[in-house]
Picture 1 (tube, helix red, strand yellow):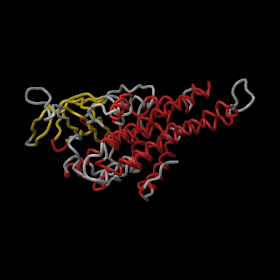
Picture 2 (cartoon, helix red, strand yellow; picture 1 turned 90 degrees about the vertical axis):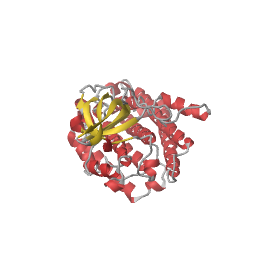
Picture 3 (cartoon, one colour; picture 1 turned 180 degrees about the vertical axis):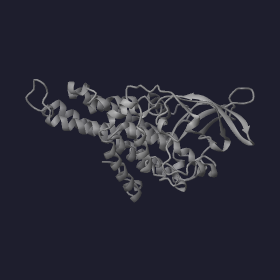
Picture 4 (cartoon, one colour; picture 1 turned 90 degrees about the horizontal axis):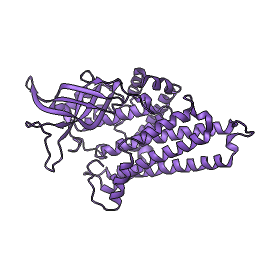
Amino acid sequence: MHVATAATRTPQHQALMQTAARAGLALAGRSREFEAQHALPQDVADMLAEAGLYRLLTPQTLGGHEAPPASFYLVVEQLAQTDAAAAWCCFISCTSALLAAYLPEDSAARLFQRPDLKLAGVFAPRGRAVPTEQRGVAGLRISGRWAWGSGSRNADLVTAGCLVIGPDGQPQLMPDGSPRVLSVVLDRSQVHLADNWDAFGLCGTGSGEFEVRDAFVPLAHTASLLDGPRLQTPLYRFPVFGLLAIAIAAVATGVAREALQHFIAEASRSVPQAGSRPLGARATVQDAVARAEAQLQSARCYLLASVDAAWQAAQQPGELPLAARRDLRLAASHAVHTSAELVARLYTLAGGGAVFASSPLQRALRNVQVATQHMMVGDATFELTGRLLLDVPTPTQML
């Protein structure tokens, strides 16, 4: 069930959901393989890219879907019901491709010409960009080390946030006193990957660190996400960090839905040790299942209603109203944490069988708990949105 909107009643949306369902069938049964490898196998990333699922947010002018945010959320959620790592890497490639709407037109056309392009990226400005020139081409020398490089092992291009360094060796400042930050597009050959992703959950995302050592990037392959997009269509007026937050929520609610379905199936037939009736015959379990269903549906409806309100606002030129951006982030964070809470409750009720690595509930618990740690949906987001609700002066650049 989901809140139907005009954006999800289109042939495009139905086709994307069918594609995601087919991809899910191909992913079925491979989650433990992905976890063991600590990354998506290349054949999986290639399959998702060739199916067009890595181009959900790529501009239509470049052959992408430029899908509405509600479609983006629902497609990622559909994938997450089969495998959270595949869904995570999918949305990372999609959100990294948002940079195409900010780059100069000819650069975007050159970089994004491949229909099966795979991207990874980190928005956080953990690199240094020193202005220079090479063979008459203006550019930047890039050095830095970035954490959380999900999907980077499969990527053709990697985007990375950098502080622009002035002649004095210090970060250049904007008129408001904030540092000048650029996102740069690097070829995968310029990136050195660290094999250090050994995590509690989302093990198959390959989210280790990557490093760049004095690599040259043409200035035409850089853009500032804070300056506003070149393409002024509704999707690119939608908040970038809002898109990232709802994608994390999509993984969380997809994981929660699959966990609930698995628990119901097991509770209907599994008889606890020293018991005589199926687990589902217990009143406490019946109560928990009903509450979990209500919590999940409520969180999703709240999120999709917030997405729709922001999408309607994005139909008009200019920045979205603060209230729409606030509600979007709050609803996404609420959906993630609600999902984590209900999966934890189901895990406890499932008893000893859930502790084994083979248990989908155990994997769901680990995956959704790691999702809660992302800065876009962490506890600090509740503090931020709470300050806005209380009219406490608050910086909103990252909203």
